[in-house]
Length: 365
View 1 (tube, rainbow, N blue to C red):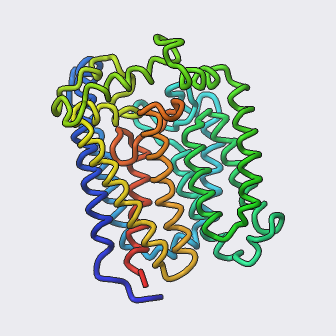
View 2 (view 1 turned 135 degrees about the horizontal axis):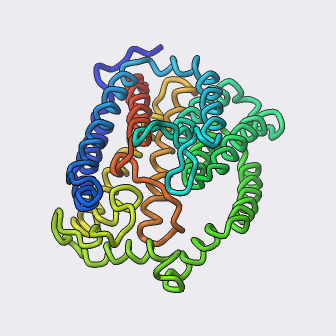
């Protein structure tokens, strides 16, 4: 193994720190009114987010200082554990229903979301499998079909909750790993066509998903129902203008915009900090993705390279979907903005994954 650098990628550390800091400020700003109304404590969500951030930073510090090849040895065990958790969460009385999805395990207000663990476990497994099967990946049946079957099974279990957004992020990041490993474009193109047909079937099978599509095409058809979130999000972004209304001055957080501290926090960022603030957040994510891809290119082995692609793919796909929803380019899916939105499992797991990415950066050629 190539000798480690004295420190991980400082650009990556800086972008993570700045995005996380902005997230903490905006979680408080977006949630203070809601928290006081629900719990009598304006700092309720901020205090919990600080706890999750502290846990995540501790986990990131650990993974950043643990040789990334360790995860190769635990890839299969981690995947099996996550499959077990995805099955357990579906059991009535054990899995906790939040936001219409049985996707949580926990007690009272504290819990974990197994699908978040599966995103990381899947890219670790794929990195190991594809680094071992590089010669076979050109064959559909021998190289590509086995990982696709495992991905499809995980996606199916996540959809039983149902949680289309998290499933889409897992599949998107996994496909990036498959493409990077050398899978043929013809195979991936055929797979995309099948996936599109399957997505249409999923939409038609659930009336609420069809409502989201029609609301996406014309939210004013049902402004108080399916189109409500999209309209209120745009009402937040529009008045922000170039420089915003000012930090803490959002109007939409006064019980107009649903989930202002989670799925639609970028709407509050744009309303309070304007185009400049929103663009700054996007720029920081672009820096993070750039350094992540650079780490993948310069990784000393194929496992490290594919793992880096998978981790940064999770971030990139999730950012794309979240901001796409917020600005009306995509239907509402219920996806948080990485490192910015309020959330325990997503924040802690993502910081853990970014720690692995930082460790890979220490071994750049």
